[in-house]
Each structure stands twice: as C-alpha cells, then as structure tokens.
Image 1 (tube, rainbow, N blue to C red):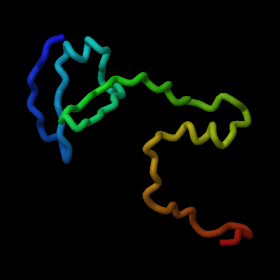
Image 2 (cartoon, one colour):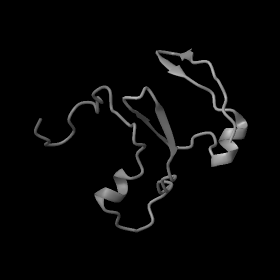
Image 3 (cartoon, rainbow, N blue to C red):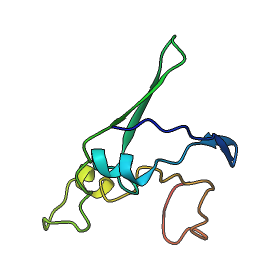
Length: 95
C-alpha cells in the first residue's frame, strides 16, 4: 500500500483527516463505518476498522414485548433534556 501525506484540518471543535479513496477501498471503509483509534507513546495513531454492529430492530416482533425489547428501539444517543408536562392530574393520581 502506498504512503500518503495528509494535512490535519479543523472540523468544528475537533481535528480531522480525510482518508484517500484508495485507502478506504483497500480496507472496505465507507461512510458511517465504525473505527477504533489508538494513540501510542511513539506519536502514532492506529486506526482499525471494526465489524459493523447489527442494526437495531425497527419494530417490535412479539405481541407482549419485554421492557428490554422496547428500549432497544431507542437510538443510543437518546437523551430527554427537559421534563414533559403531562397536564393536570385527572382522577386520583398521587403526585
């Protein structure tokens, strides 16, 4: 495989390097591929392509799903930022 010299550029608050297409094709790297990046004491970065994770289920498959099956439908980065106002109590709920 050839050696290329690339420039590091700012990408938001991070730094980034673009992969030449021939390198990406050589190892089967594509958009949204998962990679592991390691730094060592020799000032080297080692980038390794990881196996893709299986897709999360898109729909509930059983008539009586478990709580685990329900939560698997949420994206990994789902965060509820603010409290949801469900309105006034209706009935005899205790708040």
